[in-house]
Amino acid sequence: MKTYLKFLSLIFVKSFFYVVGIMLSLIFILNTLSELEFFKDIDIGIDFTLFLSFLNSPSMIFEMFPFIFLISTQLFFIKLFDNNELEIFKYSGLKNSNILIFLSIISLIIGVLIIMIFYNFSANFKNFYLEKKSQYTSDGKYLAVVTKNGLWIKDEIDEKIYIINSAEIKNNNLINNFITVFSRDYEVIENIQSKQIDIKEKKWIIYDATIYNTNESNFLDILEIKTNFDYKRIQTLYSNLSSLNIFQLFELRNNYNKLNYSLTDVNLQLIKIFAYPLYMALITIFTALIMFKIRRQDSTTFKISIGLFISVIIYYINNFFLVMGSTERISLIFAVFTPLIVLGMVNSIMIYKINEK
Image (cartoon, rainbow, N blue to C red; front, side, top):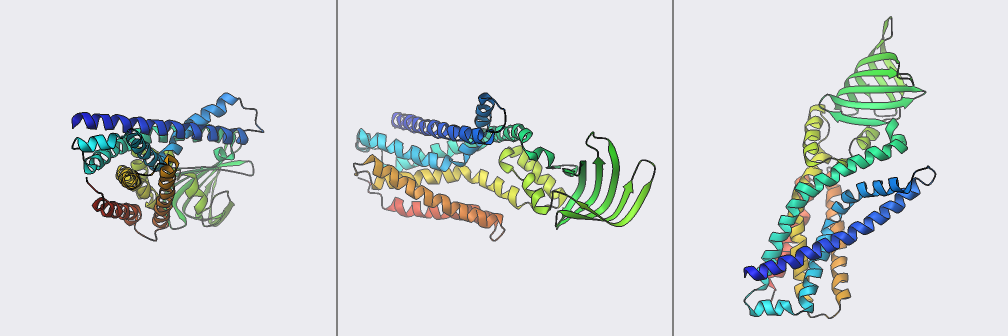
């Protein structure tokens, strides 16, 4: 039995890395074309675009792992069918259920390794990618970062640079704020202190503002400043969660909590990551059950087409529930685990129909 399982492990791992290699190559080529298009009007060498593509590819491949597990499982069975090895195993006492248990365990192990090693690796690369590319975009002028010291915003308006630090976000307001206004040469023009800023629109309303100049200070009940930010813009600039590794996500969650900011997005990301191994195992089992059903079909193309068609359906169902969760229409646990529970139930029904001969 151990010899058979070792042999099956080798076939599955080879199939898995074969598919990963193909997908990674395709993504790298597409990324390179995208970067070349982005830098077409900028004097940048091809080596830099290739470097950016290299940095961005791992985070994109992470999102494709459900498809990778599905195709890997198909190739695994196609290899067994072509050489009639599955029949040999059955005559030797290895049942379909043994193969399913083996596939579920190995996919769980690979899934755990993916979230513990590959995800952190890809997130760090993504962060470095965004940092490098921001040097050639306007995003470098407009930044929003959450730290343990609160929310920090950098903005540029009318030849002035604004650095805003806020202790808390409450509804559409920044609470306990300190604003430093610089010239283009980073000379301090003035400082503004305020307990509340309404950021619903891109014209901020600063309440109870104390303005500190070089030699004097002034108090205004209401001060309005034009900015490039509103509440939604602030969200998008510091919510690129795919560029944060697991440890940074937990740190960001703590900082969000201190800021009284919505934890929905970061909680959804964390739950989704930790549910990934289970998702991969269920996808693998489902694909295996499909392959058992169509094993007498001669066409390899037919087998792969069936799997891809089903995987697209599963992908969109999963995304639908994630969107529902991110918009808080359903609970995050329900959003992440409902597709998995449904997939698990389908797997259970199909397992009963396997003909063990």
